[in-house]
Length: 148
Image (cartoon, rainbow, N blue to C red; front, top):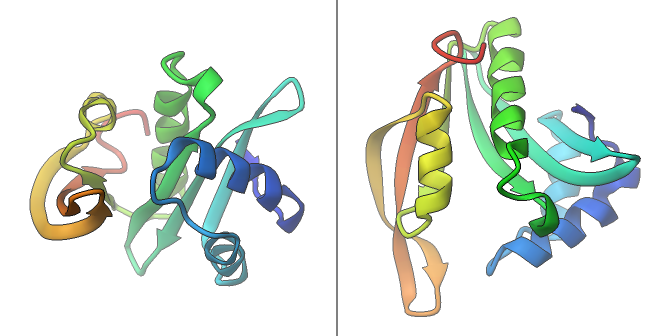
């Protein structure tokens, strides 16, 4: 992975729109870059095929967004990106990484569990969906536990 730049936002946004029912906006990605969050892209043969946004805190971080282009999913890229993010967190002495995931997103939950994340909480009615809202599962992983 390499750091995301402002020039990458259009390609990242196209992936986000194609894989999320309720995607981040261009402004969300630009704000993350402007705020100094750890924003990365993954490229294969010069094409951006994945991205991640990690918000560092004092000694912890939150994975705000991660996405893999549909034609690159289920090939290990998401797991590799998570491994790199956990290594980045460890190198920056961010002991723990948190994230929220839709309760209905069983594929993502399984990926996070394989990467060492465990469920630590629940946020009721956190995400919008077609029926109004759905819960978010809060997960966490110590950055040195696995892959880091």
